[in-house]
Image (cartoon, rainbow, N blue to C red; front, side, top):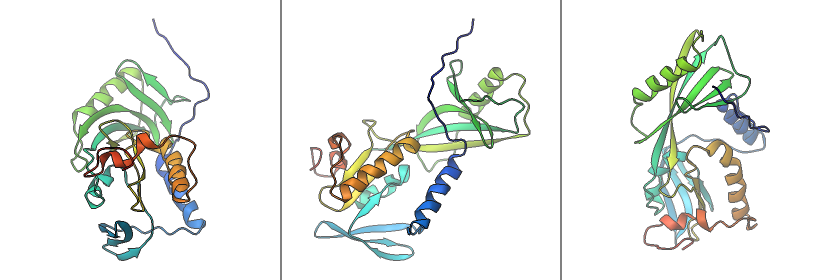
Length: 237
């Protein structure tokens, strides 16, 4: 006997890559500048950020915001943070030009995976593992998704597949780091695990409020990066 539970009022993004590209384009159209460079060091004078050294040169600043997802792990040693953050590596398989496509996202109880109708095809995903963000993908999670996708859609026909692994930044207490590190002028906005796409806009607004001295209307102490600051023992220190 089958059972279906419907959650109304939901939404989903059918092309996350294009969504981010459109946000970046809007940022540039509003006067922002997008520079892709490797950060070599974050410099401070009297404990306050002064400039960023990169492979494209030096960029002077009075404020700096670190929102690099799992790659923030490579920057933490430059800003006196000691976060044992690890990658929650999630896998998905996209079946291109599928013969059948659900109208809405679905969660399958058998196999414990998600099904999403996307612009590029049928996306089946949901398995995760902890591992290094610089390591290559594992074989078994992809095989697991393929196996249960075939059971869920036994008549599915498709022209090809795309396999993908994403590294979600996971902290020990499952809370992101959002806020200023002491009085350094350095702000963090990473560690959202697998909800970064939805939590990102809110995080951006919170950081913008903090930078402009406009106090957010929520308690920010649980998210303080100070809880992982080297040499400190309490949030906000």
